[in-house]
Length: 409
Image 1 (cartoon, rainbow, N blue to C red):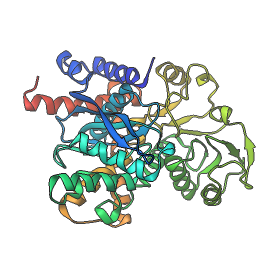
Image 2 (image 1 turned 120 degrees about the horizontal axis):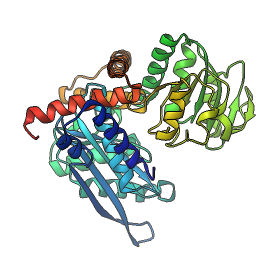
Image 3 (image 1 turned 120 degrees about the vertical axis):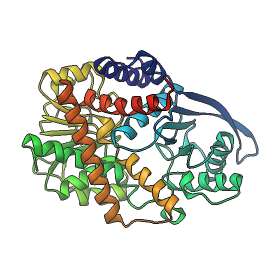
């Protein structure tokens, strides 16, 4: 497939065909209900003015207000944003969240911007986007944005609106109405899914390999380590480190905090990052980027359980190979929906002005993510299809019902 948008459409069409979804609903969901491309003029520090291209995709709002992330990276494409908005529709439905799918982005390299330039870019995005608030469209963070950027977005929105509205933007600092546990949410959810599947497969406290040791990968590793799993290898963009006896994850996290990379960690040996996915292990967690498990390496993967922490890490062709080999795959739309769940918690807290403890957030996230896992797996078994299709069918059933109730088709 050419890009992640085609992969997303492929998964939707496959599930739609299996469940017999009405053609007019399938057609409606194969294209975002609205997509916009716009430019942001930014005054640079040297006095010049530079134009940046930005996007926002609203996939569907039958199930509730559209939300989430804002991605900032130099190679950003419209197709990527469309795909991510579709994924958000599915993740929200999978997790029982009353929201549609939204995603935004800016084609820019944050590392090449000064703090002032970056702030002007983010604020300019919000002004040009002109979102309509917590009950319509809620932006959030993604690659290239963080709590600081979300604070600027919220401030810009409130300046335009003329009133305080903490629920209008997700992933913001706790002091501005954010939720505790937002940073850890996706990693906690991935770990919960891995543990749920491992328990059913007799792989509890077994050997784990994690590709990607950023925010999601590191929190996943920490959570599984605390639960007694043996993390035998991890990688990042700089390299990989392994220890057959198990890595000391808290020590590794301190090493990464001080050096910025897993390479050089004294508690393990240097490993070949390119071959990490093929490591002999029980559980494999791709937590980096899309399309890392392909037709070229799928047959070499030894793990019995694959938990997709990244978005679309497995190509459709590789998926078929893995399933034929008897591998069990927890799909991305289930495994990494923990962030979406806590964003929903954040909106609820902002609207009610009732902010929860970290323990309450984690407890409620655990309940929601396990329910999402169980529903998707059960739907797959009911329909005689893999869990990935089960998750999409489960989600599309909920979206279909909302569309029909509204009389849109």
